[in-house]
Amino acid sequence: MAVFVLVSGPFTGGRIWQEVEERLREAGAEAYAVTLSGMTEGGEAPAVAAGDVDLETHVEDVVRVIDGIGSAEDVVLVGHDYGIHPVLGAADRRPERCGRVVYLDAGMPKDGDAPLALVPDASVAERAAAEGSGAADGAAGSVPAPSGAEWARWGSTAGLSAEDLARLDRLAAPQPLRTLTQPLRLTGDPFDRPVTGVLCTANGSGIAMAEMLVASGPPEFRVLAGPRVGFFELDTGHWPMLSAPGPLTEVLLRAAADEGRRLTAPDDSPSARPGTFLLDVAERPRERRGTVDLHLPEGEEPSPAILFVHGGPVSPDQRPTPRDSPTFLGYGRYVAGLGAVGATLDHRLYGLDAYPTAAGDLAAAVEQVRADPRVDRERIALWFLCAGSLLAADWLAAPPPWLRCVALTYPLLAAPADWRGVPERFRPVDAVGAGSPPVVLTRVGLEHPVFQTTVDAFLVAAEKAGAEVDVVDVPHAHHGFETIDHTEETRDAVARAARAVLAHLTA
Image (cartoon, rainbow, N blue to C red):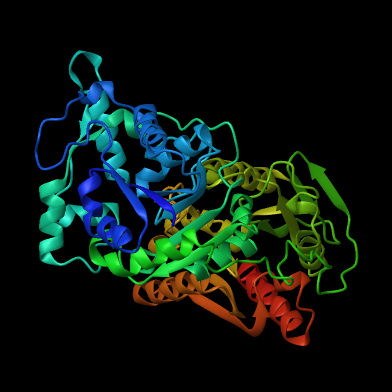
């Protein structure tokens, strides 16, 4: 049987694993629940001062446990939430002893990532920063442990009884600040070993989300479709060791046996089959200025402009870049043939934390387009696709008078729970209101469930606020249909959406 090393999330120690640890041993496995330095439970004074504890201290804690196990090589390291950081650090230092890493409702940190970047509540991150800057004599302090309802800031409390929450309160300990702010240092790829993801569906994660991320999410999530990566779901909240110790134990044993659902990138994803644009559009004069291309219509009078905004995150090395892809070349040429300037850009959405950078790139591109004398600067539309639609939030919340329309095609309108690096500012579901410009939303019937949930929430919010939304439904189309679904239905959908946008531009 396997040997399990169990490392919990912030503010908790080894005793939170008691039921799981006992069940694993009853099944014949070895199990070691780790209480990390500075995390003494039950109100006891820690043996090490918080200022002397950082992430590297916790990595060494886990390494010492591994070294003390003996000759067993098949060690399964289980990292819950924050615990995945010291687990990955220890696996990197003892690769020959690590048989598998289990991400238990945890993020996917890389070399150089600080745990604070994955904190789900911005107010908690601000409090952590304040604790550090306000510590006496410049020494690092601790983040106070949550209690009662405050635990929900760190993850869903679904499935926890009143007794469970009281137990969390009793066992909680302040989290040394430097464990959250020190970057994780790795020499190898965390996925160069067997990996299992255990997703707690009540906390917003699930296999459907993982499949979406593989198919059309940020490039770093493609490793989830690797041959040595498996997945399980638990229908509970963020603390399954308390709310579902039996199912969690079963899942850990199955993970050690190399079970779990494998993911594959679907053959019809845009990244797998880039294809050609679904409409046969004639080339138009195109001018390239920096990161912006202008596809120009006929005529000498200034024309309204539609600026198309790609999704992502994308790799900075991606070739062709989005504006040279069939989708954006097609859209630019198509609207130019209809009498508008079709503008496209390459923005720097290179990671989940890069939305502010991409927003700045978009704002600069808008000003560049409006400054062109061939553009009617008072008649501009922004057309967002896929996860680039999160960038629409700023424009929906505070639209300038010249922004006549916002178009959204198979959009993501709120960041999934696992996209913790996306700032709260980029939530169109919260930004849409009565003062927003008219919206043309193209909704595909074969959408990823995670995307569809955000579209549904956006439409509810828009209706409640009295915002104007024109929905173009494409029942039999996939996400990225412009290059994979060449049907009369999808061609008609593009034409309907473009006509609706142009109607707002010329009204």
